[in-house]
Image (cartoon, rainbow, N blue to C red; front, top):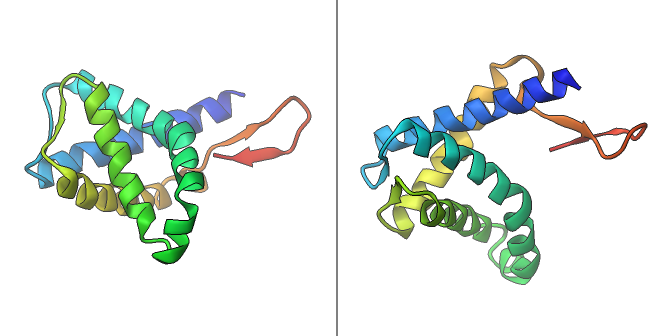
Length: 134
């Protein structure tokens, strides 16, 4: 169980780092303090785990019609949702969120490749169950 917690914390750290680098590159993406950065990374993970699948399901016809490109819009909406909830995290507009979400996805993917285990988190659904990747 400790191994899973360590992997989850490493993944969260990669997201924190990716958001921090994105805020340095994109003028319209700003954090007022470190606490806002850490909370934003946590809530972005929660939003991607729970809200994003619901949006993907309801927009599936549009996603298929656009050959998956609408998923980029959903990623931008997740960043805008988190910025609306977290005090101290500001996104200037949709296009900033759109391009920042692309950068964050690619950058975190690359960074996680340098981490032993690929940065993937495996958790059992229930005791004795096979591991599931999240």
